[in-house]
Image (tube, rainbow, N blue to C red):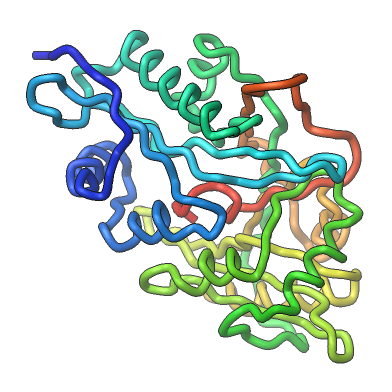
Length: 316
């Protein structure tokens, strides 16, 4: 039986009920420590969690979260956010509640000064978002993969944290990109070294005294036992440094069935990855959708671009 629904911006005291709804919906459960780390710890700003709650019980019937994701498009900073963890209780699934929750979230993001809303939808939500709310496809990410990775020699070192040199490195390595996510030392340490359980391994490579690249990796096991290593984030100043990082990633993944990563249109490292044996899995292209909330419509530019697993939510 359904009840009238009202919108609400979630507070910390709502976390247990929010997680009960999310964990009853999604295959991969989220614990309270991980949720609070992601929602409240981001140096770029707290995630805004929009709810539809039952008017009488105040129990959440729907959740839609938006996390700040500062962008740079054609060297112009863009205030953006990424939507994730969209779900409705079965009794409320359908057009009306979905539309109400989505519109409430987008209005909230606009009020926060967000110009571009982003989404990495699953197959179920991709077309409804486009048809009902006029989202558009910003780009499609190819999955580059390599089967049976092997141990390879490399000169990389394992990074226990990112230091202040990262900011200069990232500015240098992304100055050629026409589309990228803004990152800094504080964000990198929060995202990869402060997550509860610390599931990530980070490799760096130096050229002389300078940081010349990094790769972030994480293992994943499918329910059927198939194992993958994801390259969650990857940047390098030159092809030689990139080759060492790829070798380090393959060594990390040597006990997995495959290693993979996302490749955005204009991904500057794709040629070197393909030369190292990575191929595109045509059946696994991930759409990135967008909705311009103010100003002229924003589109994915021609030229070089980068979007990684780590730029989506913390599933990875």
